Image (cartoon, rainbow, N blue to C red; front, side, top):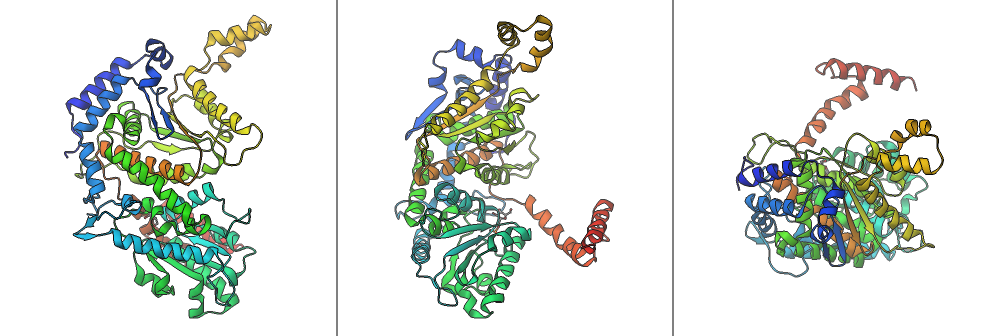
Length: 552
Ligand code: F6P
């Protein structure tokens, strides 16, 4: 598994890209009646269509050949087998084990991990069932009715997204227990979640793999102070906390009872952890059956990804398209637009998944990457985003690949709104590709009776250049099973992209620097000491912060 070096496969891709230059998407469609069939894939009622990307069936064949040259099948097998593919931390990457459907043994360092997973799942299920059924009592003997998940990054984004999609944060339909998510150290976040809450019936799930993350621990400490102010301190407060962590000793030291500390293992990366007990909030808010269904959906995608040859492998093929855009075509951005309001938080979730995984500039062997890695990723739900940044997509100076994620059936239908939603998604993809050429604009304006000089003046502003690439993912509907498939699809795509970039997708050392520098600056901001070593800009900012803080 050598790092990327000039290779026949890469050279073939570059030569091919040159040969494709100047051929528009509409010309490629005109030249090949089979284009849609060749550049789309149906799987389990999904349809992925990348025929509006700037590539051809030959490109895909070259990309598959390149992926084989990069040993992609061996990397996939190594991940599922529990090999230590997180090289810089010498860890396996086994989030797939968390959703494994049978009990087939899976060894890490010689020990089967499946029994420990089943034990943790049984405890999750019991806790979720107790909470939902009003059987978990707080310090005053009243049942818990409100749960606040305290965690950040992977300890927040995945569980929050799933709860958003499957249930919404509040039990507005009288279906169970309210769950809120607090991640930010900004006191406003926790304050808003606590507003109107009753300490006697509120429980906090502290999710932190490390149990050292400043934001989470500070919020947990403030939560404990809030409880103590009304309920009194002492061990009784333990009834109001559950912890999910790989650092059980720290959780117990914080005051969580041993039976309420659930495990997470070092072979589960934070951004892949919603399938573990880090997803307890999902089981609490949506019920154990939904959590199990979510896992089953992900497992179905895992099996497809593990067992399907590359030319028919959905996550691999979509990742190859991403790779083509990023490295062969040099596109530095990627836009994701879910046409499902419940997926509003999907772009935020994907930002951690994709950018924390593949925002690297060093190859696995420590050498600098000579080619770009993960493009910036951003997005918002459609149709709202059509009235915001789509202007930029249609007429801005850069062509950026867009991903349309479109569940076909509505969860709660109203009138014909779902048909309008889906039609809008398809229309945007079409408009990005076809654009609106000058001649068509001029003809349209003339047909409306506009004077020739007014046409000369207005027409250029109405032209849309088109030829802008997109992929459309159609899925039948958004339920737990489909969501599990969607999230696993993106996890595997991200892994494949990283493997093709030649980087380790499973560490995140870049995040550590900011954490280290924040320590001394806390003392400077709060107490006015210790920023002497900082640069002039930082010292100036600290001084102004101190001045403004004193003015209250
Ligand atoms: O952002 C860095 C990071 O380590 C993420 O990878 C992780 O999901 C998050 O912080 C939270 O970490 P922890 O679960 O240890 O509190």
